[in-house]
Amino acid sequence: MIGNVLEWFDFGVYGFFASEIGKQFFSDSDPTAQKLKAFAVFAIGFIGRPIGSVVLGRVGDRIGRRALLTVSIAIMGGATLLLGLLPTYERIGVAAPILLVTLRFIQGFSLGGEFTGSMVYTTELSSPRLRGLVSSSTAAGTTLGFILGSATAAIISVTMASDDVASFGWRIPFVGSVVFCIAGWLLRRGIHETEQGETAATLRAPLWSSLKKDVLPIVRTFGILAMINAAYYVTFTFAVDRRKSESSTFLIINTLSLILVLACKPLGGWISDSFGRRRLMLVLIIAGMALVYPAIHLMLTGSPAMFMLGQLLLAVPAGLALGLQGAMLVEIFPLRTRVTSMSIAYSVSLVLSGGIAPFVSTWLIDSLHRPTAPAFYIIAYGVVGLALVWPMSETNKNRLDQ
Image 1 (cartoon, helix red, strand yellow):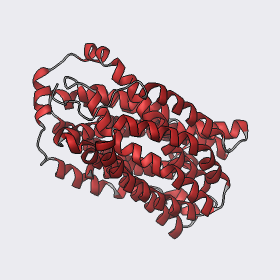
Image 2 (cartoon, helix red, strand yellow):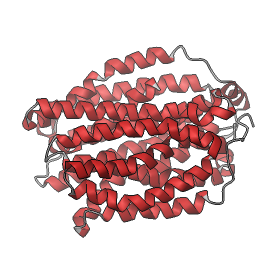
Image 3 (spheres, rainbow, N blue to C red):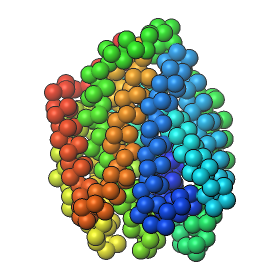
Image 4 (tube, rainbow, N blue to C red):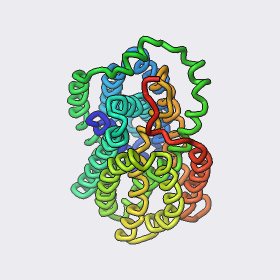
């Protein structure tokens, strides 16, 4: 959990300061063009994840889960420090956005193996009756990272002038978090390998033939993840970035709403242990589809109080779903190349849903001039999710050593 707190703090801070970063690294005078480019770079971080999934996933399957988790946090720490120290467009010209894209790609590369590797590790260590609850600690770590990132952004925005935030304030969390990345790396050196990880290392299954055999769980991963993650990033990255220029209150509200998400994640894992992960996932997809339109309307057009209500409408189904997803995904992938196949499936699904969500939302609103336009994009993912999850059987009792 500690590792995910640190890595997702770094990854999330970029989203909270996307507007300021756009002004520093892109030459366009049009604020919308700058923001679109900044969110495109945000998406680059997700595009790096599938490549990291292949490379770091193979480390997890052939060397061990422990080796993967130690390497991933070291890569993230280095990329984050360099991003915080990166010269702007005004100082080095076109090299600035190129280096920004490169570092975001490296951050995504790290997360390509980190998040799914930690989900596999925690789920394999837990008893079958508590897989959902125990593996939700990984998901809880990501939200803690986002909460710390949102709180840091709020503090910086409240205590510094807007010009100072744009010029150097956004750099503070990137540089400061390196201390915590070092602490996380030292902690991870002491973890022990799982039995399944040791077995997988002896199997040394070929990659491409395994991926062909895993096509069905890879496709189902998209159905499990897409709608909830698109809704999550629109709610807790895009919406707050769009409104925070009006008042720093929106960053404070975002932090409070994320605390509810954090509370719902272990609850979702725990409920799924007894109620069934497939059954609960279907309920939450339907709930998200029903709530996303009014929620986005409230977040993008309402007062701060209405903004918070809109976030809370999606915080509960998103938090519950994100809490159960880790165990559910581990349970549908076979042992031979579990980390690699699951990491690739997860990363590609995130690119096609959460990673492009802020960019697509910005483009839809500015093209259609309708603040609620992103809701239809998210609902479409919900339809796909229902079609893919409905035919599945329950996964709770699946054995993880096969």
